[in-house]
Length: 470
Image (tube, rainbow, N blue to C red; front, side):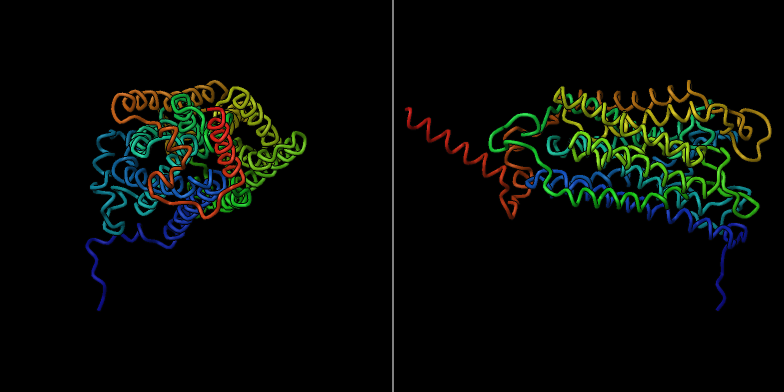
């Protein structure tokens, strides 16, 4: 029996469109690998007594943000293209909220004159929803083991809404800041700098974890339980991100002409090789710092710093430029890390990597690639959205950094004020010392670490001495 289709539009389901669908679908797979890598880093980096709770909080936060993005977040990002065509934010919301017409229509039933390439946009909902979840997972790294679950989950919901608006402004080709000259190929501003801005505020409210800088109860020091898992997590992220790079490219006729999401000239090969050069440069400088200072953390921070610094310009660098820029990124992360450590500020990931190396990378794009044409949209020859009408420059890169970090700070300040006057945001000292696996789930670790044994023996000795004196 022949398949009956209502008003089929063959242009929506050609072989060429299917290939593009698979390219963007691979990006969602890459994003999920990134999430797995982040969870491995988490399990390897938190106290054994908090490992399960920290991981499940990240997982739940991920899906809260994922669902929120499906609800309405994508409509904010897509609004830039609606406005380009003369429509409004309201029109985008009506089409792309969870109950919207475009979200719930099969591509072959929609006239290309109304919305061409619908399958690609629908896949992009899933793709960007993964990154909305990643933003919340990254935020949790800064507040893990000390923020109440309820406060974190509310923060994840709010962060998704605000970062979705920021993605409209800063990531794409016709958002307000992009159209004025801001360049960000990989979404460094809304994915990395935004949660770093939130972290800057939250950590000042939450204080340091037990043992991080001073002994507290049975926790005499803070030591990552499994450095092997940390390293495995870093390499899992390295394996997943190449697929994401493909999803940051638009493809036009003839067949597979790749153009950056920013509308800058690029190619698949250049973007991929820049990605590899960024990791290599960061890893080499990270190793130099690690062996020079005898601090292993830079072995892992180095390649991540190189990647974050390069991500905003994978489309416009050439590989040798990317390698040199990446060499400087771990140095920036090192300076931020050591500055914070000396002041006993307990945040070792988001601020050195994102606020430090991420900002450095955005600024370097403006220096190295100043004058490179981008923005607008292919096919527009004049007007405010003409193809490549704008140019990359340092001034707009600085504006993008300030807006991305600042919006994160403002969001966290508002949330902190609300939490402090309602549900509270900080886990008690006693619960932090005991461990949140025990506090929330009544789970005891299968082994007691040497640090815990030393802490308990010390506490027992102190009690015995006090009794003897009495």
